[in-house]
Each structure stands twice: as structure tokens, then as C-alpha cells.
Length: 489
Ligand code: BG6
Image (cartoon, rainbow, N blue to C red; front, side, top):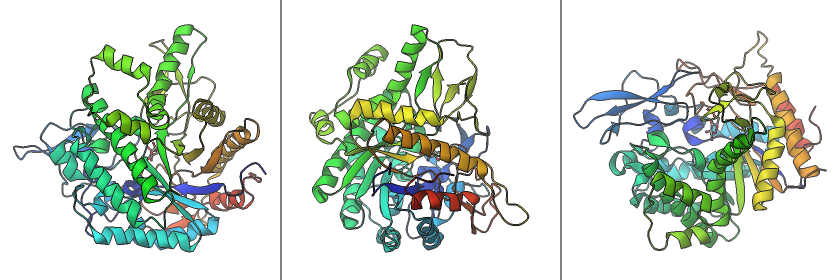
């Protein structure tokens, strides 16, 4: 058997893409509630109100970066479709969704808590109904023996904090976040053992994700510093509250290959890869790496720190590395190199590999490469907490959904992951494919781009009754879990 007996097979979603119920049960608004739908190459928009009472919109680019003028506040317009408001309605369907996950044999389910459901304004305000909602969800998971894996913050910022504090640019937000984390770590102490602080810390930028109005490099890195300190404090707190807790970090991991053996291309790839290593070095090794300090020096970026910050970062290192893997990319110094879409960035096209309908490079071996790169560098357990193929699905006349393309993608990636464990000896804890049930795409805000084993009747014009249907991949993945990854065909 390749995988450990207690290997965590499951699936993953996030509150702003799955949960819905945006104005129910005392929940406060989050930044994503003011971000409209979009589509492939149709940018999403942030709707906002300026200080002079003018209502306007600002585009969100392909890196999910949206900016709004200083002083402007997120605003919800009438007659505009905001996909996060109902998402795929986990709020009302969680029992049904969890029963389907149990039927597939899930050992775990990765989900996020919506910060503004617990603290409606993101500060020291508490919403008991929100806390009770997650109690009910965790109880339902545990009823089937499914381990909850909880991300404390997955791309959602309480709107009040974005509007009144300029999001993570304000140091005060560290205390607000630690307060929220302490509440949930304590409340769910006996129900949740696996936590992650922030989703994909290395791609957080702009108003939608971190509430900052102007994400110039100085502001962005200052906000990230506050996030590092908050995260490290929460890791320490989580260990104090329950020494059994396993608290991880999470990055978007896209390995980059040099386009040629030209040393300049190789150096370019090293620099591209540092954009994620920086975030991992801080959270696993516990210090700002030298290359990043030199980068700040060259760019004239001065991070304001308080006396104890570096100590907190040093002491709040994580137990495991969670990461998402969808694609690889290529680094080239040739300005004319062909480009393609990527997960929150525009990538160079790899001439040897195919791309998905959304332009993402499909590279199963890249997952084995990623697992090796990470393990060689950090030597702590790893958890693949996102992986999958975004594709349109068709319901046939007989009601079936034959998503062979998704099975093929996942099969090849699981094979690569097996090779990394079996042939390379990496320490892998689990695998939670992304959007195990259809959810709203984070990048494009559409329903058309589906990842699930379970189809949800919800469409981009806002129609659909949210009913759930099993796709062909449902039975396939069930078998994979049943055989602990032995049977992939
Ligand atoms: C990851 C995010 O970057 O990619 C998810 O953590 C996101 O929130 C996923 O949904 C896939 O991206 P997209 O744009 O296809 O939803």
C-alpha cells in the first residue's frame, strides 16, 4: 500500500464560493459580497460608493486584484448578480452535501469559516448564530467520521474592516483576527484538529482578498507582514488551546521551469519560485529570507515592525505545509514568449503541455516535482489541499454527467502523487481535490467552470434550484478512496 492507513482523502471548498446565506443568521458582509460575477476573460467588478456618495464599479484583474479609490466603501447594488450571496447554498444544503461526501467515503472535508459570520464587523462583535451554524456542520461531519480541516481565512475580509481600516494595512487588524481565531479555536476545540490560517498567502493582493485600497508594493508587503504576525500568533495560540492541534500554512504552488538552459532563464525561474518560497520560508523556517530583504532594499520597501514581531514569527512556525496545485509554468527572459492564462497570473506557455479550457497548463508530473521541491526544502509533512480541473459539464438527455476529462486529470495527478510517495519517499498527509461539489469560481466568478464530483443546478444568470446530481467521477473517486489509491482505473 502506497499511502498511509490514515491518509486523509477528501475534498475542499471555501465559504465565499460554497456557503451562501450572505445575509442570513446574523452574518456581516464580506468584501466578496460586493464583487460581481464575470466569466472567462470577462473581468469581475467591485461595486463601491465614494465619499461623495457616487456609486461606481472597478474591475478585478486576472490576478484577482481589485482596487477602489481611497475612502470608497464596498457597496451592494440592486439588480446586479453577486455570486457569493448564495454561492451553491451549503448554508441550506450542508446535511445533503455531507451525506454525499460520506457516500464517497471522505475521510476529511476542507472548508473555511466565514470570518464575518462569526464577527459580523470583523472586530470584537460576536454572532452566536454563526458559531452555532459551524457547530452543526462539524457535528454532521463527525457523525460520519469525516475529519473537518478548517481554513480560518479563505479570501474573505469582513467588509467593515476593508471600509474602516483599509483592511490588513492596519496593524489593528492583527488583534481582530487573533480574537476571531481564539473564539473558534476554543469553541471547536473538541471537534476540529486540523487547521490552516490563511489560504494561498502568496497570492493575496488588493481589495477583494485583503481589503486594501491601494496595493502598491509598499502597502502590499506591509499588509503581508501583518498577516504573517497574525498567522504566527494564531499558530502559537492554537497549540496552547489544544496541543493536539495540527496547524498548517497554505500557498498556491506553481512550479516554474526555465524555458531554456540559458542561465538567464534559469535565474528567472529561481526568482519566480521565490514568490512562493518567501511565504513558506517565513511560516516554516520562521524568518524573513535574505533574498527577500535584499529585494525590499532594492525596491525601497520599508516594512514597519514592532519589537516582538520577528520573535513571534520565529516561534509561530507551522506543523505542516498545505498547498494547492493546478498547473506548472515556464520562466523566460524572452519578452515575446507565448503567454497563457494561469491561476491568478499570466504564464508563459509550455510548448510540450496542453492547457485546460481556461488556459491553465495541465502537468501531472509537475505535482511530483512540486512535492519533491517542497519536501527537499522543508522536510515537514505536506497536504495537497487543492487540485482539480475546471471544466464545463453537460447533463445528457438521460440525466448522466460523463466527466471523463476530470477523471483523467485526477487519475494522472493521483498517480504522480503516488510516485512521489512510493519512489521519492515524501511525507504526504492527504489529498482534498478542489470544489469537490460545484462551487463558484474564485477567479472568474462563474458557475460554468466546474470542479465537482457533484453537480449543482446553478447557472451564471442566477437561475437553478441548487439540486445536486452525482457525476461519473463520483463513483470513480469513491473507488479510489475505498482502495486507498490502489485502483485508479
Ligand atoms: C485557488 C483558490 O487558487 O484556486 C480557490 O484557493 C480557487 O479559491 C481555485 O477557486 C481555483 O481557481 P478558480 O479561479 O478556477 O476558481
